Length: 154
Image (cartoon, rainbow, N blue to C red; front, side, top):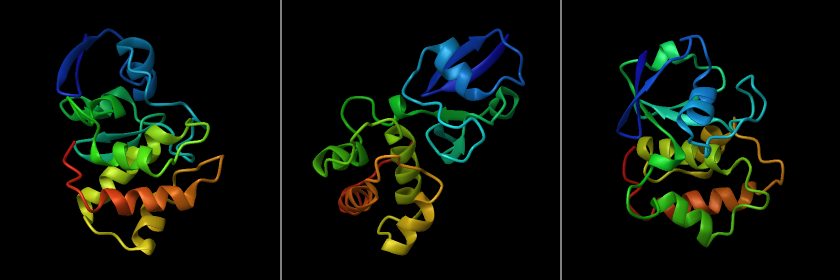
């Protein structure tokens, strides 16, 4: 059995520690907000936070997160929407919505690091997250909107 801290909840999982974190989150724990996109850490759909930093869960083995805090899209806010999630709604970012949890997790990490990012900061931080629908301008607008509120922590 392996202990795993996800969204401030301890889970005991009985699975090989070389299993990608994405599959542990989705198939074992049942947190399906984190999506599978490419499986090789190129698209960003599977982005979660490990000890507050964005990471691609599709290539992160369970062994790498033992003793660390994992935060998924479900854990961004306990009782309400996180300011980035609210900005996503306000700016009507999603079309198909598939990439959005990874986009939001990357945006939260950016705002934690740079509370008032420039367009260049946003482009740099978000370049590893692919949106098949091409809503990049709305993503940038939502990040700027969220930067006017407290992005909180995860």
